[in-house]
Structures are given as C-alpha cells and as structure tokens.
Length: 436
Ligand SMILES: Cc1cc2nc3c(=O)[nH]c(=O)nc-3n(C[C@H](O)[C@H](O)[C@H](O)COP(=O)(O)OP(=O)(O)OC[C@H]3O[C@@H](n4cnc5c(N)ncnc54)[C@H](O)[C@@H]3O)c2cc1C
Image (cartoon, rainbow, N blue to C red; front, side):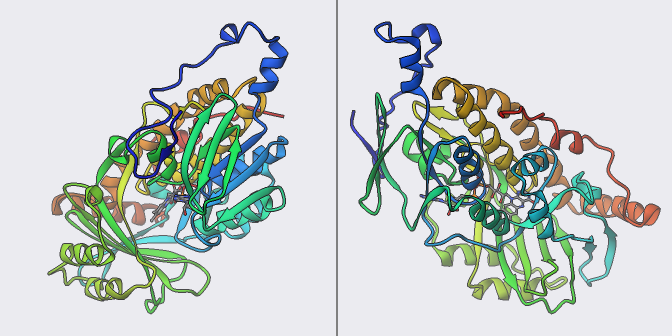
C-alpha cells in the first residue's frame, strides 16, 4: 500500500476499513492466535497537551508500550485557564491526580460586565453562567494540566518532542510511521490527539474543512500587564458581535486578554500570516473607543504570545479508520464557547484507553469508544449556543437584556444564583465504566 505523505491527496487507508467481527476472523487461525495478534501492544500518540498524555497515562498503566510525538520543542506550560468539570472530575480522580490539579485551581471569584465608561453593570459568580460546581470543579491553566499529566507519565512513556508524523502506511500487522525528523517506527495503532487543526486527521481523513463547523467568530488571545488591579476575576465589555475580555489569575502574573469578534467565514480557508491576524483583529475593533479597547488593541499589535484562531468545532462522521483513531479536539473539538473541550479530552482518553485494554482487538475497541463517548460529546458541543448568547450577543438590545438579567442575578443573591438550566446535567451525563 502506498504511504500517505503530508501534501499528498490520497489516503493509504482508502475508504473506511470494514469492521471485522469475531465471526469474520481468518479461519486458518485459532481464535486465541487471532486475538493475540490483534491485541494492541504498541501505540503512537500524536500530541502532548491534554488528550495525548491522558491516553499515555492509562495505556501505560495497562502495560502497553506508548510513544508520544509532539511538534513543540518542549512541553508547553502555563497558558489560558480552562475548566475541568462533571464526568472529567471522576476521570481525574481515577488517575489519582485530583488533589494535584485542584492545588493549581485558579479560583476565579467573579465575572464583571462593564459598560463603555468602565462602570461595572453586574458582577456574578462564574458558576452562575457555566453551570459549574464551586468547590469541586478545577479551573486550571491548560499547560498545568499538560504538565501534571506529563510528570505522571514521563517515566513510562517515550516522549519525542520537536517532531511530527510525516507519513503513515498501514499494513496487516501495524502502521509504519515516518517522522519529519526522518526517524521511522512501526506501531500497532496510531492515535491522533493533536488538536483542532490535527495533523493526523489531515493525513488520514482529509482536509479539515470537511469536518470543521465554523461557529462564526474568531479570537485573538494574548497577555497584557495587569495594571487593572484585577485578581482572580474577569471583566468583559460586549458590543454587538464583539467582546473584549481581560482575565487575571491568582499568581500576580500578567492578565489574559481576549478580543473576540464575529466574522462571516473562517479566515483560515486561506493561509494567514501573523500580520494578517493582527490586522484583521485591529480592523474588527477599529472605532471602538469604549472601556480599555484601544489599549488592548495596542497590546495585541505587539504581543509576543498572540494566539489567534477561529471558534470552530469538529464533527466527523467516524473517529477511526483502520488502525488510526482520533481523540480530544482532533476528533470532536467543542470550542471554548462550550467550556468543555478539556473535560471531553480527559473523558475520551479514559474511555479509549480502557476499551483498547479490554477489547479483543483494536477495531472493536474503537467502535465501542465512539459509541460510548460520541453522544456525550455531542451534548456538550451543543452548549456552544448558550455560550454564544452569553458571551457575544448579536445586537445592542440583546446585550441590554443580558446585562439586565445579570444585574438581577447579582442583586438577588450576591451574584451566586446558580443557573437552573441543564448544563450541569450535561457535564456529568456519562457514567464511566470500570476497566480494572
Ligand atoms: C482561549 C481558550 C479557552 C478555552 N477554555 C476552555 C475551558 O474553559 N474549558 C475547557 O474545557 N476547554 C477550554 N478550551 C479548550 C481546550 O483548551 C481544548 O479543548 C483542549 O486543550 C483540547 O485538548 P487536546 O489535547 O485534545 O488538544 P490541544 O490542547 O489542542 O493539544 C494538541 C497538541 O498537539 C500538538 N500538535 C499539533 N500538531 C502536531 C503535529 N503535527 N505533530 C505533533 N504534535 C502536534 C500541539 O502542539 C498540542 O500540544 C479553551 C480553548 C481556548 C483556545
């Protein structure tokens, strides 16, 4: 079979490999021989952020030989805070890492909604809009999760930094992988845990545009000196189709700034330079003089840590093909507007590893992983609609109505009224199996 290389348009996997059932097993082998040959002993994971190291944690615990390849030259710590909640808390507890992650809890106290003159319209508990559970959820920098998982797996996993998969060739006994560095390896299966813009997905399943559901917004994230006296809190200023947010954690470091804006089509449909990203963001906030927006745009222009992306989800008809399977954002990005991407990555990793360890062969493991996790993920992906309404109302009337609702919430119970919608049930809608 011809290998699939980066830049090529043909997949070595052809159309989706038909799943084999026990009855389809080759008749010239005994059932036990067949099972042993198809059981997974070596795994290559692409991506060392959340899904990748979480998979490595469980797979190594089940006695499987794991390699993780990461394109960055080292593990990326720090970064913006994300929430881990619902079923994902159970997954972290089963890893024995809850206390450690909870110790890095950012503990945001409030979200304030400001007007053009900087006056705070309302200040509410974050849980009032996220459906989170104070005292139980973990709000933690993305890089802290990665670091905790890496530390827990570095002695049992072969990490290859500064490298990436260049080509994959599947054959009857495994997948031959050529890395960009020129190194090669053969693995029983390959897991793509390389994020929204997954390399593995592009190599095996095709161009991202086939699977991307563009939510209609882009954002520029960067750090800005915390000259605002903000501590464990966020301030947000909304205009129709736009939102400017600053967010400070508890470490006395710089604040995180986000400029989010509505944009008709994903700008990534064509290639963007760094200057294009900065120009586009500045253009979208041109003429907005309220609050500290001009200062934020100025800081964005020169930020050394600019992170620009579209707000997009990934919907794939199927998460595996042959010996390759996707996990985390690569399979089912939910977007930050759902607040659930990291939790989905942790839960998916637990289930995928457990199914690989307990099913007789990789194809039935992939099948049951998808069957168990997909409905849960899709419920959480749907939370993006609520996130959109709360974060970026489309019109001034909607902004006014939203602010009035927050004002009432803040007045009624000091901003601690927990929303009685279904988000909390959705966060916990999956019960984890016990894989032993
Ligand atoms: C601003 C923002 C706020 C967010 N807020 C929240 C929140 O509140 N709650 C929440 O749950 N989620 C949140 N998320 C989403 C969350 O960060 C992701 O869902 C989560 O990080 C997904 O983890 P992952 O491991 O699947 O992918 P990622 O974290 O995207 O990691 C992918 C990894 O793959 C590596 N990689 C990429 N390409 C290659 C390659 N070619 N070869 C090798 N490695 C490669 C990358 O360097 C990276 O290390 C937020 C996201 C953003 C951007």
